[in-house]
Structures are given as C-alpha cells and as structure tokens.
Length: 357
Image (tube, helix red, strand yellow):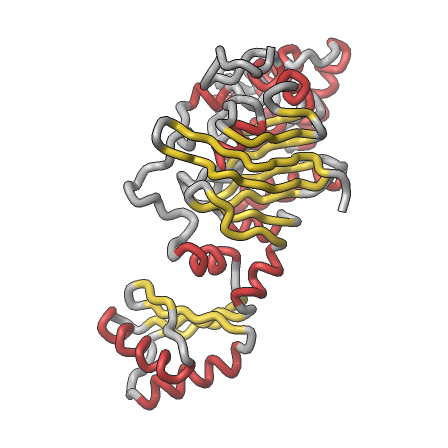
C-alpha cells in the first residue's frame, strides 16, 4: 500500500455536551477512493470539515500529505479541493466565469486560469453550457460544476461530501465515471455518502461511522463476505404472518431473520441451502410467502446488520448531529473560495491557540 495521503489518529469533536466524533482513526492511501459512510448525523461531515480546516478538532490529530490540519492549515488548503453538500458556485455567473473566479481566489497563475477553466468545462461535459448563467443549469450540471470548481487548482487530494445526493441515476452514474477518471490520474478522493451502492462501486476501502464511532473498516468485498454473499428476502404480506414465519425459520436454521414490517431478510454464504431450509420451514407451517427475492449482499445489508437501520434513516430525534447540517453559507465557501486556500482560522474557534496563523 502506498503512502498515506490522509492520516487520522484519535480524532474527536465536541459541540457543547454532544460528542460528534469519538476518537476515530483511519489512513487513506494516496491515489485511491476512500469511502466514509453512515447515516445523517453519523459524523461524516464533521470529519470532512476538520480535515479541510473549516472546523478545529477537540482532540486527536489529522494530517493531509504529512501536513497537520491545525498547525499547517494554510498549506493543507493549498493541497486540497472540497465539493461540499451545498452549491459553491455563483448562480448569476456563467460556468466559465465561476471557474475563472475560483482560479483567481485560489491564486492559480493568471496565464493558467482561462485554459484550466476550458479544460474542466470540457472534461465535465459542460463546454456547450459554459457561457450560460449557472441558474439555468440542471441539478446534475450544477453538481458537476461544483466538482470542477474544487479541481481548478489541481489539488492532489479531493474531498467530496455526498456528491450525488439529489441527482437522478443517469447524472449519478456520470459523476461516478468522472471520479474514476480522477483517481486514474493520481488524485486521492475521500468520499462521504449515504448511498452505499456508490461506495461499493467506487471505494477501494470503506469506513462505516455510526454515532461518531467507526463500526467497520475494510474493503467492500470483505465487509459483504462477513455478512454472507447471498441475501434472501421474503415478503409475507402482513406483520402477523411475518412474525409467525420468523419463528418457524428460527427453529429450522437456528437464528431468526431480520424483520422490517412484513419483510423478512436472511444472509448466508450458502444461499441455495438456506433457501431450501427456509422454504421447508414455511411449508411445514403452511405459510406461503407472497414474494421471494434472492440477490447478492450489498453494503446497505452490512450497515443494516451492524446498526439495525438503513443509512438514510434519520437519527433518534430525526435530526442530524451538531456540525452535520451546516447552513449553505458554511459549505459554499468550501469548494474553491478563500476558506480552503487562505490562512484564516477555522470558523468554530478563531481565537484558539495553536490554530493556523
């Protein structure tokens, strides 16, 4: 494995009495896609904001390409690009004007600004719309422009915070291919997402975060293999039948299936044998499932098994943790504006000792 582009040791963050991150540790090898996964409020965006110098950690330390994110924040900002959850481009400017403005703000040499903007507009399939105001762009086009803006200064490390949330499947697939191209060219990408299919397709390695703690850390293939390569889902029609079916199956196979309302779910490394056992148990109890689905396991199944909920379920109170849902103005600075490239202190504690000068 290559040199770590990002190193995180014992990273924690508290907001008053709430701890958003509990001493997390991970390394991101250079030239890979690293997936930071979890539901709303898990701590993903808090981690991103610390790694991009927008927030100061409460404990632990982190480095990007060997530079401490607190003591060497100005240097870190020159090495990174960030596409946050909210649009960071000016809707009243054209796509071309936005990218040239980002070039100026990130101190790209004057002679490089026009050609760099043209390169990115072409690469992200925005050349035909380059001279239209961004307010006329579709959601997928605006998101591609956000990522392009983060790439204007040619950063070796790119942070993408839920880059495809709200996009249609076609736009999401197109952005996935652009991310693969970036990695082939040597860029390191740290990706946060609620869509585990996205991480499964893109990430070399994933860390699953829940309530500010890492609960799994491995390659997508290994995480799915631990659960079982095959998932069987039984639609029983109503909850009463599902409860009775779960009891019959548990008596036959030794453990109860997961149940969501009238749906039962089991995972196994030997799907054929499990399916036969399940159907025999239901036949003995004179229960016939309304639907039977057999499929490969997914990272979403892994997360459900680990936490008992889906990644896109809200937290107990239905709201994200502090630091997770920031106002648009907080993230709008992060995809190419002065915040990630300048030397100002992190927004949460500008007077703290030891911060960037």
